[in-house]
Image (tube, rainbow, N blue to C red; front, side, top):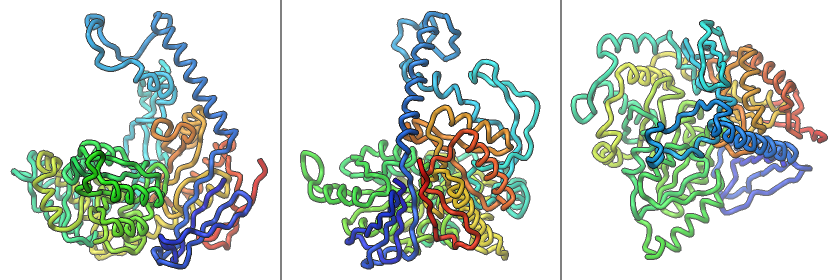
Length: 544
């Protein structure tokens, strides 16, 4: 089934979408009550073809059988074992780790390990230079050849607005600040590490988000994992999307709260959990929960989907819950002003209780932020482990964020920021449309710059990455356990820095490799027409 969800400006929570069936195609049009959406909301997830699913399971099964066989040979020293193991002197100790935990790593991941951790020796911008490496022991170790692969088109970095660069206003400002302040601080914010740049940054972030106050942190992952425990604890309930990032999952676990998971972007599943939480309260005692916190992301980095934020906010208000929004991938990349998913839907920022995001993607820097009411930020300054114990953000990083954010806001006196936001949107729509026209299965929202292309079979994960690199295209490939076992994929990240010529070159290579590896699984081809508007789609049923 090819599932396309379209929510227009008249969708309401109290009405179910009307469904129009066209063979295997489903198109959802919103009911005209409620008015939660001010723009079309189009997402598509085509189901895995049955034959492909069967062959994928068979592929993993064969790899597992051969993995056990090779472990048997290693145990009897017939095959050389490269894995880390306990020393002979420690054979009577309790093992530091269970050997089976590394079964997947040594027998499956190791076969395609050459697709990851490739050394880059240039700015990770629209193009990169890679250090060539080879392995003579089946990817257990690598050796550098001394050769550099030049001008590889970078389709994998989160450089959404193209601010990962070594020239221009940002680079000049960072160089100047480095000469003045140095590279590091050597202290926490509460001691000797609170610079004037930090305070300027936080005021700018609050203004950028449209909230009362904001706080910056030196690490994006820790912004989630160390702040959620400060906001929730025992007696609290956290409702988490099943595809939330590991930092959100870790933060929820560290908090000690009760965690319940709802289906990805499924508002019926979320509402059922909220209703049950209100009706039944805490287990055994049935006391009311101290607080209910909903954890969601703006753009989901593996699915390319955008959170149904208007509906989440409506549910949050209805059931008096709190909302924690992670905008790591959406801030800067969505919305006419680059303000993220709140801007994308035209919503009020004050309706989101905790606005979290990172500076590592659209701003070309490092770290993260939390924005909200002044009382919230004041509380986190004294209770967050990431604020109290972590070293302050580096001055050059602070300046990179300030300069790029002012550029996005237009406060640098230019229109560069606005032009990049618009270019990213155009590149995203063009890239996604062309891939669908070629017959690939593409996941996610039409406006998401994260574009997952489904590969499915384990052998094709490594083959796709290698074949693309041969054609001077750098891509990210992802498989189990980061994705469901039958949903391995290549993930492209579109950037405003990509020119149409670069995208066409990448698309040509993708199509060529797709034909070589037989990756064009879609049964619904989009008919290419030059005069069709971007938000209209024509489908052609393809024979199996």
